[in-house]
Amino acid sequence: MALRLLTALALFIDAGVHLFLAPGYNNAPPGGISQGTLFLLEAAAALVAGIYVLVRGSRAAYALALLVAASAFAAVMLYYFVDIPAIGPIPAMYDPVWFFSKTLSAVAEGIGTLLAIAGLVRAAPRRPPAVVERPTPRPGM
Picture 1 (cartoon, rainbow, N blue to C red):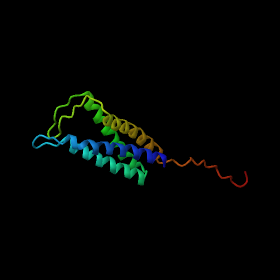
Picture 2: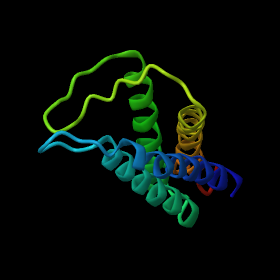
Picture 3: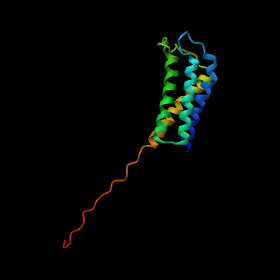
Picture 4: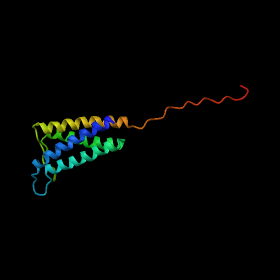
């Protein structure tokens, strides 16, 4: 249960930070998606994954948590180091500056990724112990 709580907490922190930051990133070019909208989508995904892990704690729940946390962590690290231009409606999100909220989110996403991996391993189906069959003795032997 502790693993489920910690994984969900990491996802809820991620969601909270993205909800907090979204209003400041709502500028979008015509026909584009704002970074604030992407933050709201990330927050929704993190909330759903966190609730799913809390309620079920299944391999599917941990897989979803891993997908959400790892993709968010990868995105924040990628856009810190690489200046990727806008791709279609997706805005350019290069941000080579660390501040408290961004750091908190990245740490929660990284820890959430590790916890989700641990949850996947722990929730793996267990193989039953091998049954060794003894030959049945034949009468007269």
